[in-house]
Every structure is written in structure tokens, then in C-alpha cells.
Amino acid sequence: MSSTAESIGIIAGNRSLPLLFARQARAAGVKRLVAVAFEGETDPAIAALVDEVVWVKVGQLAKMIAAFTDRGVKQCVMLGQIAPKNLYHVRPDLRGMAVLFKLKERNAHTIFGAIADELQKDGVELIEATPWLQPLMPGAGFQLGRKLSAEQREDVAYGFGIAKEISRLEIGQLVVVKAGTVLAVEGFEGTDKCLARGG
Image 1 (tube, one colour):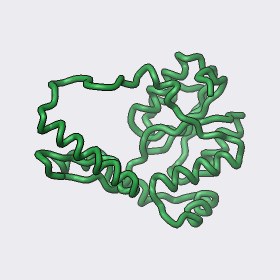
Image 2 (cartoon, rainbow, N blue to C red):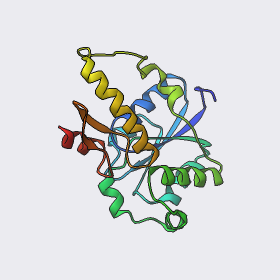
Image 3 (tube, rainbow, N blue to C red):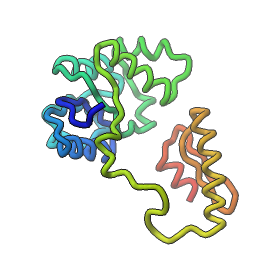
Image 4 (spheres, one colour):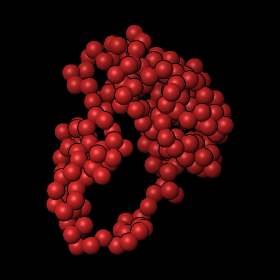
């Protein structure tokens, strides 16, 4: 895959990653960017960084896919989050309902996988965003702040093993550990609330 694609779609959740991607893709020579933005989630600043933006409600799968197919977009990326609390109030369209009905488990992995499958059915490939974000990726090793103590390094190693396991189980991706004790494990509430709970 080349990072100099002519046209890329962005399924833009909340936070800054969709905006960073749009800037990086444009700087890398992507000529046309089309964003699908979610009402109440996506930063409206995305509109100034893309050629077109289509606003949808969470769950409007048919409208989201049509935003790309109607504009000839063949590849898209998915960036940002949807606040977990908003997933309780989703009113999916018929296509979204059909997809959800088929899922035995409804977690991030199965839902995003099903969305990728639906995009593919209509000729839109969900691709990795990393080729365009590579300049922003930190290298291996220590990055900033004070160096970790031996005890903190042990906590990191312990927490990493737990984080890998809860990720494998589709529970979450974050664990807060201090002095060998797990203080918080990310669940449906999301990263920020887990961090706050963990102190």
C-alpha cells in the first residue's frame, strides 16, 4: 500500500487523531480527503482539513458507506473513538440493525470487523492509517519524563501481561498498576475513566 493515495476516506471518531491523520495525509500528497463525522463525537475542525465531510449519527451504517461510494472513495481509515456512553443510545439504520443482529458478541473487535466487511461489500477497503502517521510515532525505548525506578519497571512488566490478556478477552486495553497491585482494569467505561479510577 502506498501512502500517496489519490483519495482516502476518514471514519472520524472523537479526539485529535482524525485531525492529525488529515494533516499528515495531505502533507504526504493525498489529493482528496472525504470524512464521515459523527454528530456529538467528531471535532468540527475536521471540516477545515478535508475536501468534504458528511455528518452522520452513530449507527447510520448505510449513510456512512454511501458517503464514500457516492464519491468514488475506494479506501478509508477508521480513527478516533466513539464514547462508550453513546453506544447505549445508538439508533441503527436497517443496514446497521442487520449487522448487529448477526453478531453473537458485540465488542469493539466484532463491531469494527463487521463494519470493515460491510465497507468491503460495497468496494471500500478499510486500510491501516500508520503509513501516514509514521512521522508522529515514537521510537522504541524511553521517551520523556523521569526514568522509571526498578519497582516501576516491574509494575510495567506486570501490567503489560495483564493488559495483553484483557485485550485478548475483548475487555479493554488498559490496566493501572502500582506497587504490584492492580488498581483499575479498563472495561466498557473507556480509557479516561479507568485512568481516573486508578488514580
